[in-house]
Image 1: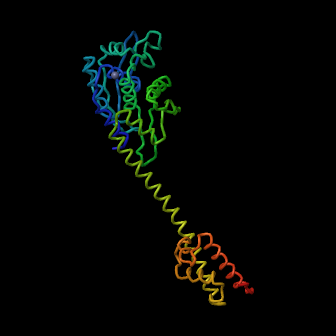
Image 2: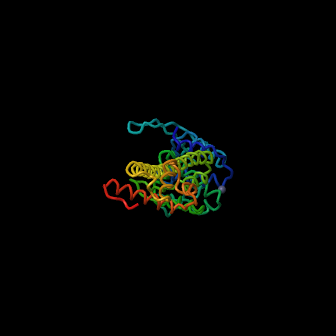
Length: 318
Ligand SMILES: [Zn+2]
């Protein structure tokens, strides 16, 4: 099962609280699944087609409970191009126009008498706005598994419908983006926080938690990796600087003997030689009198200059 079908499964199992929401959800289901066909002379064929049986059963239950209509469910087997079983709920022909009328979708001034989007009163309440968005996702929504990258979308069949769906999200301050893909108008979100907000707004709180778990794990492991890389390179830099200092000190000792250095430099050379991995600040504390970090690095630099001169065969001024 994909993450997207988990989300749809969770949404399809939500209870339908009120008649207002059932009206909104059924309107979205019919319009988003492109299930209203004109048959001439005020007659229509009305169906809801979806990839999940649970979605179709949900519509069946709402039709029966709130409109007293007993629909017919059938299975559509996949074709050669798309080997996916789909499920269809058909409203009896003699009740189709009556249902469209009850949903407020009939309008003589519209093309073929059916509105492209429901009247505003359908989404008057916040609960109905959510219900509309939920059904739109159930019918034409998709979401990536968070492991695979962040993307959630609703691909509406018309621009008017896409805009209407976007308005419902706007109400909850979720600003979806819109793009065109082939014949569809696609609303989408790409930011992890927004996707999480949308899942929870739609009512898929289980999926939202699963999404957040993956997201947090990904972010923590990214941060840990960045931190590790950074620490490693700092440590590597410090270690290689200390290694060079030790080499310089051994060279100085071999060529002229550390005893010949000034007392300041001699003490520093001996302290470094005995503490190859000690940070500069701690090295300074070993000195008598104690020395700050910059004083330590000045002396180490001085030892480096002496070693460079010795390597070059020059006479050093000690
Ligand atoms: Zn409602």
